[in-house]
Amino acid sequence: MSEEPAAKRMKNSDEYPNLCAEVAGPVKEKLIELDAVQHQLDVMSEKAAEEILKVELAFNTERLPIYEKRKKLTSKIDNFWQIAFLNHHLLSTAIPEQQKDLFSALRDLEVQEFDDLRSGFKIIMTFDANEYFKNEVITKSYFLQSETPSTQITEIQWEKDKNPPAPEDESSITFLEWLSYTPSPDSDEIA
Image (cartoon, rainbow, N blue to C red):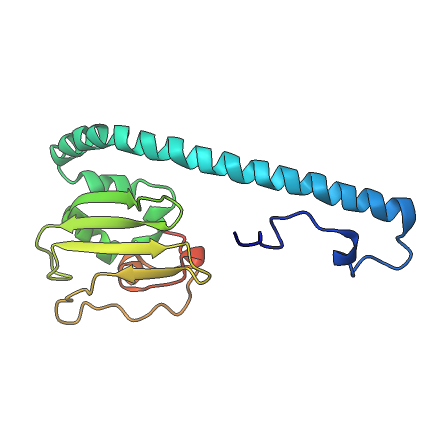
Protein backbone atom coordinates (compact mmCIF):
# COMPACT_ATOMS: atom_id res chain seq x y z
CA MET A 1 0.00 0.00 0.00
CA SER A 2 1.37 3.42 -0.88
CA GLU A 3 2.20 6.04 1.69
CA GLU A 4 -0.28 8.91 2.20
CA PRO A 5 0.63 12.23 0.57
CA ALA A 6 2.43 14.64 2.89
CA ALA A 7 -0.66 16.85 3.18
CA LYS A 8 -2.80 13.91 4.37
CA ARG A 9 -0.62 12.32 7.05
CA MET A 10 0.44 13.69 10.40
CA LYS A 11 3.90 15.17 10.55
CA ASN A 12 6.61 14.62 13.09
CA SER A 13 8.80 17.34 14.57
CA ASP A 14 11.56 16.80 11.97
CA GLU A 15 9.16 17.88 9.24
CA TYR A 16 8.88 21.44 10.54
CA PRO A 17 12.16 22.99 9.41
CA ASN A 18 10.50 26.40 8.96
CA LEU A 19 9.62 26.84 12.60
CA CYS A 20 11.75 29.60 14.07
CA ALA A 21 14.72 28.40 16.04
CA GLU A 22 13.25 30.23 19.04
CA VAL A 23 10.18 28.00 18.89
CA ALA A 24 11.28 25.03 20.90
CA GLY A 25 10.27 22.87 23.78
CA PRO A 26 6.65 23.00 24.93
CA VAL A 27 5.58 25.62 22.36
CA LYS A 28 6.95 23.57 19.48
CA GLU A 29 5.24 20.45 20.83
CA LYS A 30 1.92 22.32 21.17
CA LEU A 31 2.24 23.58 17.58
CA ILE A 32 2.84 20.02 16.39
CA GLU A 33 -0.21 18.89 18.39
CA LEU A 34 -2.21 21.73 16.88
CA ASP A 35 -1.16 20.64 13.40
CA ALA A 36 -2.33 17.09 14.18
CA VAL A 37 -5.73 18.42 15.25
CA GLN A 38 -5.90 20.53 12.08
CA HIS A 39 -5.12 17.38 10.10
CA GLN A 40 -8.10 15.65 11.75
CA LEU A 41 -10.31 18.59 10.80
CA ASP A 42 -9.04 18.48 7.21
CA VAL A 43 -9.81 14.76 6.97
CA MET A 44 -13.29 15.36 8.42
CA SER A 45 -13.92 18.23 5.97
CA GLU A 46 -12.88 16.03 3.07
CA LYS A 47 -15.26 13.28 4.23
CA ALA A 48 -18.06 15.83 4.57
CA ALA A 49 -17.39 17.14 1.06
CA GLU A 50 -17.60 13.59 -0.34
CA GLU A 51 -20.93 12.99 1.43
CA ILE A 52 -22.30 16.33 0.24
CA LEU A 53 -21.36 15.39 -3.34
CA LYS A 54 -23.22 12.07 -3.00
CA VAL A 55 -26.35 13.84 -1.76
CA GLU A 56 -26.07 16.47 -4.50
CA LEU A 57 -25.72 13.75 -7.15
CA ALA A 58 -28.82 11.96 -5.83
CA PHE A 59 -30.84 15.17 -5.89
CA ASN A 60 -29.58 16.04 -9.37
CA THR A 61 -31.12 12.78 -10.57
CA GLU A 62 -34.39 13.56 -8.77
CA ARG A 63 -34.45 17.05 -10.33
CA LEU A 64 -34.38 15.75 -13.93
CA PRO A 65 -38.17 15.28 -14.32
CA ILE A 66 -38.75 18.69 -12.74
CA TYR A 67 -36.30 20.27 -15.20
CA GLU A 68 -38.23 18.60 -18.02
CA LYS A 69 -41.50 20.03 -16.68
CA ARG A 70 -39.92 23.48 -16.50
CA LYS A 71 -38.56 23.11 -20.03
CA LYS A 72 -42.05 22.30 -21.35
CA LEU A 73 -43.49 25.35 -19.62
CA THR A 74 -40.76 27.75 -20.77
CA SER A 75 -41.17 26.53 -24.34
CA LYS A 76 -44.80 27.73 -24.22
CA ILE A 77 -43.78 31.29 -23.32
CA ASP A 78 -42.83 33.36 -26.36
CA ASN A 79 -39.28 34.72 -26.06
CA PHE A 80 -38.88 33.29 -22.55
CA TRP A 81 -35.07 33.25 -22.65
CA GLN A 82 -34.91 36.74 -24.14
CA ILE A 83 -37.10 38.03 -21.31
CA ALA A 84 -35.06 36.13 -18.71
CA PHE A 85 -31.67 37.35 -19.96
CA LEU A 86 -32.71 40.95 -20.53
CA ASN A 87 -34.21 41.17 -17.04
CA HIS A 88 -31.31 39.50 -15.23
CA HIS A 89 -29.35 42.09 -13.23
CA LEU A 90 -25.92 40.77 -14.34
CA LEU A 91 -26.50 39.09 -17.70
CA SER A 92 -28.38 42.05 -19.15
CA THR A 93 -25.23 44.17 -18.86
CA ALA A 94 -23.47 41.84 -21.32
CA ILE A 95 -26.12 42.31 -23.99
CA PRO A 96 -25.74 45.45 -26.10
CA GLU A 97 -28.80 46.78 -27.92
CA GLN A 98 -27.71 45.37 -31.29
CA GLN A 99 -27.49 41.79 -29.87
CA LYS A 100 -30.87 41.70 -28.09
CA ASP A 101 -32.62 40.17 -31.10
CA LEU A 102 -30.41 37.05 -30.84
CA PHE A 103 -32.21 36.10 -27.65
CA SER A 104 -35.54 35.78 -29.42
CA ALA A 105 -33.85 32.86 -31.24
CA LEU A 106 -32.68 31.18 -28.00
CA ARG A 107 -35.11 28.27 -27.71
CA ASP A 108 -33.57 26.42 -24.76
CA LEU A 109 -30.75 26.67 -22.26
CA GLU A 110 -29.64 23.79 -20.09
CA VAL A 111 -26.84 23.44 -17.56
CA GLN A 112 -25.56 19.89 -17.05
CA GLU A 113 -23.09 19.05 -14.33
CA PHE A 114 -20.59 16.32 -15.12
CA ASP A 115 -21.24 12.99 -13.39
CA ASP A 116 -18.62 13.46 -10.69
CA LEU A 117 -19.82 17.07 -10.06
CA ARG A 118 -16.33 18.31 -9.17
CA SER A 119 -14.90 18.18 -12.65
CA GLY A 120 -17.16 20.77 -14.22
CA PHE A 121 -20.33 21.45 -16.16
CA LYS A 122 -21.60 22.41 -19.58
CA ILE A 123 -24.05 24.99 -20.82
CA ILE A 124 -26.11 23.82 -23.79
CA MET A 125 -27.92 26.49 -25.80
CA THR A 126 -30.39 25.62 -28.56
CA PHE A 127 -31.18 28.30 -31.12
CA ASP A 128 -33.70 28.80 -33.89
CA ALA A 129 -32.37 30.15 -37.20
CA ASN A 130 -30.78 33.56 -36.65
CA GLU A 131 -28.62 36.14 -38.40
CA TYR A 132 -25.50 35.48 -36.28
CA PHE A 133 -24.56 31.82 -36.80
CA LYS A 134 -25.68 28.59 -38.46
CA ASN A 135 -25.41 26.32 -35.42
CA GLU A 136 -28.61 25.05 -33.87
CA VAL A 137 -26.84 23.88 -30.69
CA ILE A 138 -23.84 25.50 -29.03
CA THR A 139 -22.25 23.86 -26.02
CA LYS A 140 -19.74 25.52 -23.73
CA SER A 141 -18.00 23.11 -21.33
CA TYR A 142 -16.04 24.05 -18.23
CA PHE A 143 -13.41 21.59 -17.01
CA LEU A 144 -12.51 22.46 -13.43
CA GLN A 145 -10.71 19.41 -12.05
CA SER A 146 -7.24 19.81 -13.56
CA GLU A 147 -4.44 22.08 -12.36
CA THR A 148 -5.27 24.43 -15.19
CA PRO A 149 -9.06 24.69 -15.54
CA SER A 150 -10.18 25.10 -19.14
CA THR A 151 -13.14 25.90 -21.34
CA GLN A 152 -14.19 24.18 -24.55
CA ILE A 153 -16.84 25.42 -26.96
CA THR A 154 -18.61 24.13 -30.04
CA GLU A 155 -17.03 25.59 -33.16
CA ILE A 156 -19.40 28.34 -34.17
CA GLN A 157 -20.30 28.64 -37.84
CA TRP A 158 -20.64 32.41 -38.04
CA GLU A 159 -22.69 34.15 -40.67
CA LYS A 160 -20.73 36.62 -42.80
CA ASP A 161 -19.38 39.58 -40.78
CA LYS A 162 -20.99 38.41 -37.52
CA ASN A 163 -17.97 36.83 -35.80
CA PRO A 164 -17.06 39.18 -32.94
CA PRO A 165 -13.37 40.00 -32.39
CA ALA A 166 -11.67 38.67 -29.26
CA PRO A 167 -12.55 40.92 -26.35
CA GLU A 168 -9.97 43.54 -25.45
CA ASP A 169 -11.11 43.73 -21.85
CA GLU A 170 -12.11 40.42 -20.22
CA SER A 171 -13.96 42.24 -17.46
CA SER A 172 -16.69 43.55 -19.77
CA ILE A 173 -17.47 41.26 -22.68
CA THR A 174 -20.69 41.00 -24.65
CA PHE A 175 -22.72 37.81 -24.87
CA LEU A 176 -21.51 37.07 -28.42
CA GLU A 177 -17.90 37.57 -27.34
CA TRP A 178 -18.50 35.24 -24.40
CA LEU A 179 -20.11 32.71 -26.69
CA SER A 180 -17.02 32.44 -28.88
CA TYR A 181 -14.31 33.18 -26.32
CA THR A 182 -12.70 30.56 -24.07
CA PRO A 183 -11.36 32.28 -20.97
CA SER A 184 -10.21 30.43 -17.89
CA PRO A 185 -13.29 29.28 -15.96
CA ASP A 186 -11.91 31.20 -12.98
CA SER A 187 -12.41 34.50 -14.78
CA ASP A 188 -15.69 33.73 -16.59
CA GLU A 189 -18.25 36.01 -14.96
CA ILE A 190 -21.14 35.04 -17.24
CA ALA A 191 -20.97 31.28 -16.62
